[in-house]
Amino acid sequence: MFNDIGPLELVTIIVLAVLVFGPDKLPKVIQDVTRTIRKIREFSESAKHDIRSELGPEFKDFEFEDLNPKTYIRKHLDGDELGLKEIRNGFDLKKEMAEVTDAVNGRDRAASGTSSDGGRVDMSKKPEDPGTDERPPFDADAT
Image 1 (tube, rainbow, N blue to C red):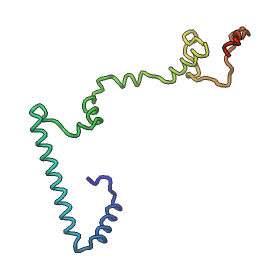
Image 2 (image 1 turned 90 degrees about the horizontal axis):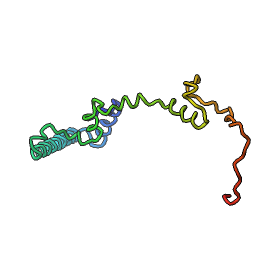
Image 3 (image 1 turned 180 degrees about the vertical axis):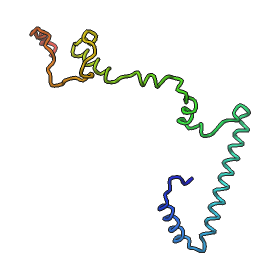
Image 4 (image 1 turned 60 degrees about the horizontal axis):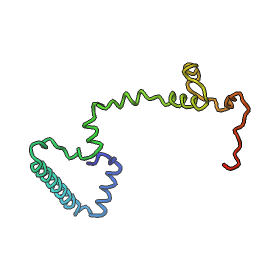
């Protein structure tokens, strides 16, 4: 319950409790708080038991933590049945981007093989000129 409270925080809470309630009333307050926590736990356990009994025998191993979507997915897809690891490992973003860049620049990657620069594109170079200096026809109605 108090897994994330450090020793300094615990000392601070105790000092504040002594200052607020006083040393004579503090044991009574602690007893009341622990009794309340116990009653809440008993109530939640009885509610869980009632729900399990109402659901029937097919839900006898039902855990309420499974209602959390992340827990449910982890429990049922623990073995990676969908092959997500293979998909993730088979996807090489650098290679895909290099292929797209080559296609945009008009280079044939299959003819040249894999590039020696690891798929990097030199942005300082100007694109290769297709060899003709023809401009596209001007359409005055389109502008």
